[in-house]
Length: 429
Image (tube, rainbow, N blue to C red):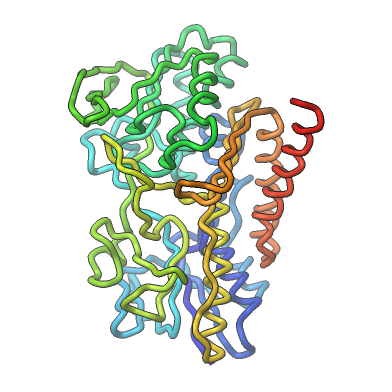
């Protein structure tokens, strides 16, 4: 009998539990440790932040959902992982033993790296967590009654740019529906060297299409931007040239602002020699396994992935749902191979597929593989993306509630894109 513990119950942790349960042997135990009692669907947070979704619409109670599949759960914060002892120290002082550990914690949000950033004592909003999105919704309700300038985007070191673009477009859509868009100057601030870089060096014509989308919506932008501090109602931003030299100082007034922070590893693993890199992300080999602690695997945003390319201002590499699911599937099969006395052979594809909602339309991009040169580099915009994201939200929430282990994210997305590209060839549209 093996004790398999999954640390984290988010986009990576919950599917990991279901897939591992389906592949485990009779007698093996699967335990999920989660600080929060509920799973929430992170990609829908921008909708919560403008009151297009309620929190309850994108949450699932973790313990009952796991119990239905015969999976144990511990709803408590993990204080520290002790790899040499194969134990996890919990907040109450107890310890959880494991034979195999899968770290799927997601990131620590590094708001503290910039003075005045973030919703916890700072002056900007966030859509990184559903509680942040709820707080942002309250701020949004106040804002639309007294509109003014908006500053939106991401700070240096951020690695997930899609939600920033989404939220800018969603706010634009909501303001147009309220017929007050003309009262709201909007500026997009990003460390990306150009609009549509996305931390991926661009995908297809993402630069041209996203620049066009921003111009059509009258959203100004500042690239190669380093946010130095935020005060109540104003943001201080230094713009740099392509050599990384400062060229202009901006003081941007705002009545509403949402800025994505940089990510770090969580405290339970931060600084463990051989387990994490200097930012606290879990180092892994091609089989999702840590090189030093061979019974520890990791999936999701907490995995260490180097930037796709050097940029004047640091930009991280995004980990999309497609990539995370691929990591989960590979990890589950590799642990089963180890249980059977074999060496792990499965590798995640690490391709990138993303659906970005723009409120009444959207953009989809595919990068196969993530790091150039690519076999497929495709970007498209249309109302179908908005509809596809809504449909996928419903599917994924049902999957979390019912405990479905089948990893069909890739199949759904790739089939949809294949049909779309075929239609384009046939119709010329």
